[in-house]
Length: 553
Image (tube, rainbow, N blue to C red; front, top):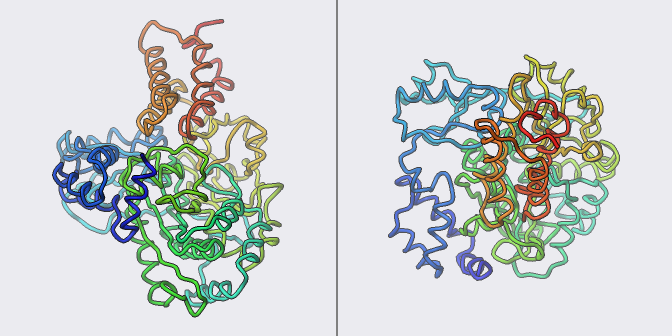
């Protein structure tokens, strides 16, 4: 059924996009009206259940959220910082209880107190500033954070050159054999920076070798991991690195369309990327036969509507098609049947931003940076518990100790663990910090996950049992609902943890272990499958703290 819907949605292509129609209607009155949903379904020759199912899934489109005017961030960092209750109290001076909702996460983890209001994000504001914002004062949404590096020649945070000079290198690349450009990507050993660490060259080669009259390059800009704001930095401060990378991907694979799916929680990123695309248009670098190269390419920006699961590549593709963002069973893989059932390469923002350096300096030079199978650099985000919060570009293989103590300059208060790589990453006790280096292998060998490399600090005085409850609650709220282990298992885990804290009840450890195994092996994607890692880390390293909540075996 979903294949048929993909094809029907694809009949109108990207120029009249089904998902965009839903988002556009939602912005008018807070949610698409039922008669409008029926008309859209009729126009696209799909069932009413598709448009209804999609529109009722997203935070920005749900009928129950129609009255909401301000969304408060409920991500891990803001929760741990304890800023959000006071923020809500302040907002209630201007809004009713029913006009305040929540979302996760706004990428303001360096200063907290984050909220979304009238299409803009705010954070770290005083009471008087909030009063001014609610009264319509403009220009207060820009945040500032430290950007640093331990590299003599950074790859992603280096000063950006003149635009024409930068794109002269792209035009030069179009004169090369696509096979040789692919070889540069292979030589670089660059792996996905979004979490899975999958080699980019595998995806490109698979798509290149799949015959089709239409192919797509999709940028997964749905960065939703609490603690991470590196993709946001690249889109707002270095968008042309990403666009360059997408065009090279298109040239290698034979794709003529590039889609940037940017989360709706990042409105400033949407604006910055649209501006960058307009600059490309002015330079004559988009359209047919670009600069006589024989290569055609155009961009499309799709603004998300509030759903963490859209960071999973197949859910993201379903979302672009206007379907409910359910995770797809693989195979077939997106490089074989992706967007509108056409071959599609999906890469994360940071991964794509590495391409200009690789093409300009060679894949072997890039591979010479880093260590082992983890080549190049990595952007690491430090939260507000550090003395110098911000985003740092480090060479792969940099010690975690250097990141924490030298770049971040240590903690503002006692910290017992770092949750690294998002809610599906590992929980690293502080005594393990000296054992780890920032690369895929070190984290895997020690039982953790590098993931997006966002760092969430868990204070010494915050109960670990409460944090584990938060992780289960987050997964339950963000599950797409397609598979039972994730959608039901996360709820059962949350229920056990709540009951153990508030009733005369202790959790059977075997029952918890069975639940974690079911989530791990039975979930369709990393949302349910990745949750157990952090829980297991906590049960291993914080056994004494958690012991009162479990039956003694």
